[in-house]
Image (cartoon, helix red, strand yellow):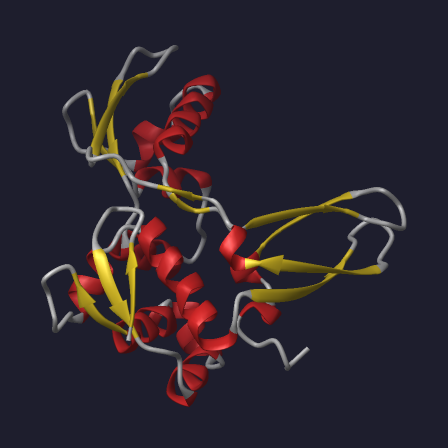
Length: 222
C-alpha cells in the first residue's frame, strides 16, 4: 500500500489500479454519471485518516481537490510518473507532443476554514460559500444543462443569510458574479493539473487538463 497526505491534511492509503478499475474507466455510461470515478476511488482507497474501512459516503465527502490529488497519485503508483500527451492545435490542426512529470505538479494545501464570507461589490449582498466535494460534483454531473450559475450554486451556502436559489444568482450583476468566482478561485486548493504549451507550428497557446486527456490513464491506447 502507498501512503500520501492529501491537500486537506488527511493521510490516506492507496492500492494500485487493476483491470477492475480499467473496466470502470472505459464504461462511458458510468463515466458520464460520475459513478466510475467514485467507484474507482472507493476500490483503491484503503484508509482515510483513522477510517480503515471507507464507504462510498466517505469518498463523496472528500473535497474535490483531494479527489483529484488521489486520482493523480493512483496514476503514478499504477503507471508511473511520466505522462506523454499528444495534443492537436485547434488553430492549425497540427499535432504536438509533450511529456509531463506528475511529481512536478504544484499542490496547494487547503486552509483549515471550510466556509468563507464575501460581500459582493455591486449589490452588497453577503455570500457564504464553501468548497466542492464529491456529493456536489455528483449533483453537477447529473444536470442536463450545466452552467456557470449551477457551478456557483453548488458552492454557495447562503445569500444574506438565506438559502440560495437559481433566480437570485442569475439576477446578480455580472460584476458581482465575476468577483465571486474570483474569490472562490482564490481559496481553492488541490493539485494543479493544467498544462499549457505553445504550438511549435503556429505559435498558438494550447491549454488542457491532464485528467481530460486519454493518455493520462490509458497511455497505450492512443
